[in-house]
Amino acid sequence: MKKYFNLFDLRQKINYKTEVLSGLTVAIALVPEAIAFALLAGLSPLTGLYAAFSIGLVTSILGGRPGMISGATGAIAVVFVGMILEMKETIPGLNSESIVQYIFATVILAGVLQMLVGFLRLGKFIRLVPHSVMFGFVNGLAIVIFMAQLDQFKIKLPDGTKEWMVGAPLWMMLGLVLLTMLIIWGVPKLTKAVPSGLVAIITIATITLGFGIDTSTVKDTLDGGTIAAGLPNFAIPQIPFTWETLSIIFPYAVIVAAVGLIESLLTLNLIDEITQTRGRGNKECVAQGTANIFTGFLGGMGGCAMIGQSLINISSGARARLSGIVASVGLLMFILFGSSLVEQLPMAALTGLMIMVSIGTFEWASLRTFNKMPITDIIVMLVVMLITVVFHNLALAVLAGVIISALAFSWENATRIRARKHIDENGVKRYEIYGPLFFGSIAVFNEKFDVDNDPDEIVIDFMESRVVDMSAIEALNKLTELYEAKGKKVVLRHLSPDCRQLLKNAEKIIDINVDEDPTYKVMADALSD
Image (cartoon, rainbow, N blue to C red):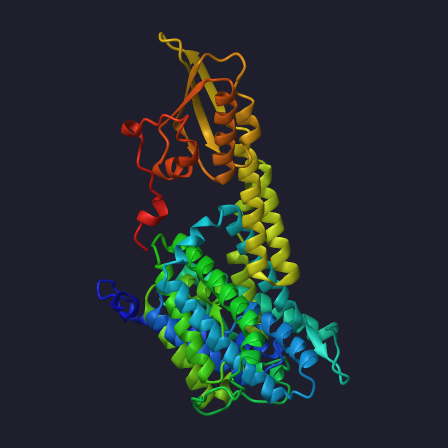
């Protein structure tokens, strides 16, 4: 347990000034996102803000990736949109407050599942996600982040609909956004003493407030509400504790847990790549689960790692846990004491900040590899990116990418199996197999043998091959039966112990040289996580 819950790595050198300033920048950027995602799910703004505070704090202290920011996210909000719609259809008369209680229970159960994944050390399977899927995931998220900012260029009409800005309001918004982007781009060229995002937000807020410029603010996104509130209260979700309730929330808890872990672990890998360090996936799974359990009891909507805010934090120079702690505590201070100031911040500054994040998130190098990457990798990248953009469903996007990559890999390896043939001085014909023998390569494998014309004894050598699955085992059984029917003997060499066990039903015609058999291990299992 200690390896999961150590609070700080004392060996890490911390730049306290950078960590604090970066954390404050992230805290400001968290406010509109948390509110927007809560409203997207049909929940009150405070459910998003409480989730951003509690999840961010717990994962910053316990997580496996210092510097990564977690909170309420759009991926989780989309899951609850579907859950709310289904509950309204299946349970007539259920009011909004009761539905919210079911959501809190779902978040808690999802947290339990995430902790289980971490304790079972299943986080390592994120390594199975190909790089092309990573490219598609990152590029898709960059586009989603950018497209989400376009809503700030619309005005809300009295009937609740929105239309694009025109005239002076549009030019004013564009000017402030571009000025924000220019500041974020230019400040690091002059000094890196303070985060450029924080400089931009303060500068734009000073301009709009000082000159009385009429532009949209954070308060305008609240629909007449406020982010001012007290500390979140601990409460057990008020739902019936029955099997029927479990049958309702469990499928959504699984989806929330899966989406949260996939997005968190992919974000962890992305930050690992940027910082040239290595986070701990299983530890992050436990932290994400603990955070969701915690936030479910505190009235939060649940969440996971936030790639946008994480990149703001990392690009500002933060590398330790302190920045995430400052961001979470700062957000709580905004809720308790600074709501009036935060609500006056111009959305133009936050919009410009997030657009710069989307530009920095996009893997521009992936565009230059189009004529160099295999066509299957390009297809995978585009499919993942498209699903992420259209459906905002990261779990579906990654799953589709992994499946397509696996099928492409299987097809490619199915054609790579080879057999070198020769007859030795004793008249024994030897088949030296190259390439994996599995369900996809069986047909090509069978074509290599000449049962009718082969001598009375043959040797099939798997030194450069691997019998992968039951389909391959069955193919070997059938092949040996064909040779047996002709009165011929088959010797299989260099089979792994598991293959020898599976082939025990053919022992009467198989002579396995166990002295030369290698011991097979899975490299991923040997790596400490």
